[in-house]
Length: 594
Image 1 (spheres, helix red, strand yellow):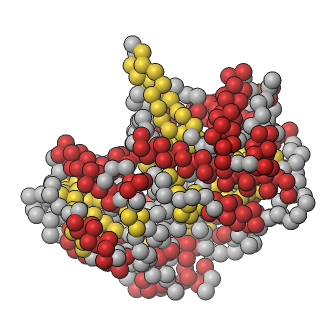
Image 2 (image 1 turned 135 degrees about the horizontal axis):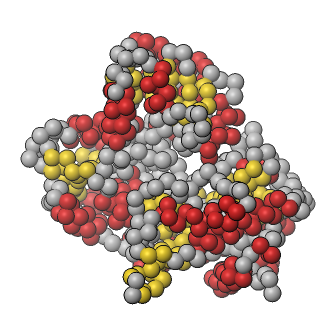
Image 3 (image 1 turned 90 degrees about the vertical axis):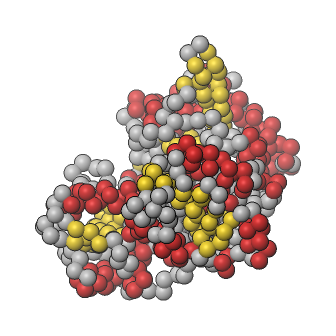
């Protein structure tokens, strides 16, 4: 069945339930960025598989709204279908809610599966549509009937984080959560984000590809912890260990119903940007709602010294794997057939040889030439390009290790590159160094730091559409909140202990793309009479290609930073390498500008 036939089937259901429009979100009941296949209804209907996008179907129109990271990808994947691309945040393109208010008359009804929409999204949508007399129905799960051969909910077995990698115990983490609950006057805390549940329970799984999480909810009170999970995911031994730690086990599908049993005098804490609307509306009306950013989201973003030590060790192993891969690629390009897919498989195989490796942390972006202009490109059999000894290749990849999560982007010159490619590469490097060397007072927000990445580019009239940095988990999601470095004004300070990416880039459609990404940990830089100032320590351990650099465009300070970084990389990786790999590393870390 093609996309057009699927949309027809959806419209038949809409007519049956009296709907004038139906909205299909990307997410699952836990507001996951990367949901399990069971929840990929938007992808099933539209054919677009990017990680961000909203499908809106009316009686006469089907539209997909997505951001600039996916414009090129969406255009290709929607081509020939009845689904029209709406490029978000571009002049003259209304958001999908505004579009619906223009299109639908008063008295219309818009349907959506409330499990895939957060309470914040529900309120915003209900308010905006309500102003135009448009009603909502959030209890329509059309995926159950229309998603042909829908994958079942995952039943993968969970595993407990080994004590050697654990850091704080479950009891210690719950105690920290309860301290924060007291400050907010909450008696019940609803935990819905999958990585929040995984963090506080010290449990991992493989329910979502690349993210070591599992489908579950929690309710934490002053003296009880309830974990809602499919019991088939737990061994008898694991169940006993959790119960011995004071965790009561309940069925996953009973969560919404049990929320209605919360005592009427309770003060219920939840994050409206995480908890889905169906569950939020199940809380008894008599309860006092305490709405706040997730306690656990903030706690888990502040990595302990123990976690940072482990994360750094994971990055050394990751760097060793990357050296072996990069030497193979650069020595064989032009000598034997290399493709994006073959190189992607080779990189994964090198990581898989490393101790404590679990999986990749996301689908590898192995993008040669024009494909690198697609920000979140992932090679497929149809798009798979031969890699030639010329131009640039952009490789964004990462690994999940039991003691840390990695995320690194390098752009390599495979042979001759154009002057424009060199310029864009150098400007990107200047942006990476700009953020890496930033010093800023406590309380600084990511949106203020974003300029450090873009300043050099702006002088040349160049910019990019994605953010400059995101939080990264500890053997958890590669994209982790609450911090973010981007143009978007998010009211979250960058704090000591946060692990955040540093990843500016430049993309030219039909030509090339450049991105250089390192992970950093926020550290204290200095204390003065003006207060405490913070900075970043770069923890990614792998050389930056110096071949495409226009050295004359770098300041002496930037040259010094790059040379110092390469010395650090060499000192960290060389004890773990020998022979040709060690010689490759030595050459790759040679100082420039001397």
